[in-house]
Figure 1: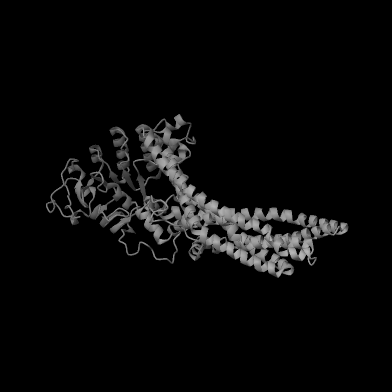
Figure 2 (figure 1 turned 90 degrees about the vertical axis):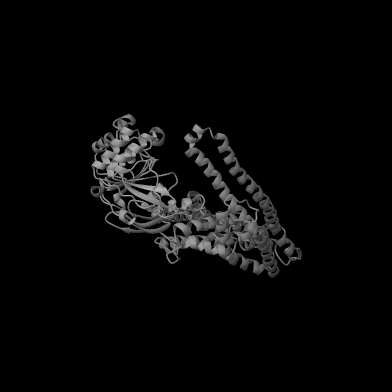
Length: 628
């Protein structure tokens, strides 16, 4: 999108059209054309380019044949009219026979042309949607876009805007190509009948196009752009209500949710009211523009017909040619409503494309910004890591140095909002803003357990082996894993490992967290990161699951607040606030400890950069509180 679009989203995400800072869709201009090309070009130059150009060539051939048949039908219409006017029976029936022969070819070609057009649009949509999904999911762009206020409703842009883009692109491409063919074919007919009529036609079409572009152009595109966004926001508010139904029901928050939904819906209605008022004026203009063509050619040719210089049939033929050529020249006027919606949607899709499908030749927008570097390593090590939230300069953690050897277990604790979960996101590669280096083993050696486990639609087996789609473990082994996480009767209760149910509603949060531990046992990673992953469990279950992981020699990184988990960890990273931190041996740490005064810690931060359980079993290491 343009620069003023970005400014609005950052400063006024709820702005209403008509205010000083308005987000506008691109006008019918070179900028809009460039946006279209940037989205469309990969398909026409990509791996399916041969099929794309072949289908386009076939459609052009069908259009040429259809245009030729249309000219022949127009000529026969004039011939029949002249035969009737002259009372020439044989001439009339010969013309009728010719019309029927032409129609015998025209009808199937017409049907096949529209079938090929829709098939082409469907294939383009399939290719473009897959490309967007690849870019959206690869590199975790879907996660990064969650904090990007410039991109609203990326799901709608992929599901609906891509469909509209491909269908409308093919539609308008063929309309313009067909208009050129129609213009050439019927202009020759018109020129042979009346030069004056051609001149009037050109002037009339140019006048109508200029009025449509400059009077109705930008306002309609702008309003259509906002209508797309308002509709998406309204739909998202309904989705949010459905996804958080239980929490809202417990709170009794129906009135507030209704007020929020009504606000979104009122914006939809308000914008649409403005849109239909502008559309009313356009409809009046379009109707007047098209209806005058029923009279104009006959008025110009009336003297020639009445004086006997021109047959009545030739006048009818000229009127048909005039209408066809005017439709070709005035294609923008006739299709301006749908064209304005199409251009408004291009901007939304191009903005998403620039984020999930970046130009490899374009400069990385993160160049010049301070970012945490990630490099492969034998074990997890944080070297002078300073962490900031996305789109914020607040320092959560400053100059953190830490090394986890195999078998270590680190507990991260601190007050709410100090950056515990944020540090886990940085370790997992989700957050990058800051500085320093994170050395890490291969991605497959990590497994992350959030507080709220994700349960996908599918079988109980798929829940247990997620994120894998298959496993070498037998059903008996999977059942045994369920027993190890204290869910011994779950498979029998739901109907076996292949049962398909609504797992989020069926299982309690505690059962979901135990099932998530089962995933760890299925995949047997070397490092497990737990973000309050046992918050809904009782102490006995929590202790048993942690002990299971420790007995396997798994390296743990945990965020927790309960003292009972201390015995399952070898070290504690205490985030004391304002970017400062301290490291302690778990055996010497107490949850009610007070941060040491600056400069009075027992050991320096440099001494806390490397540790393991054997060297710290009986001594405490506390890092100096760092200046923020």
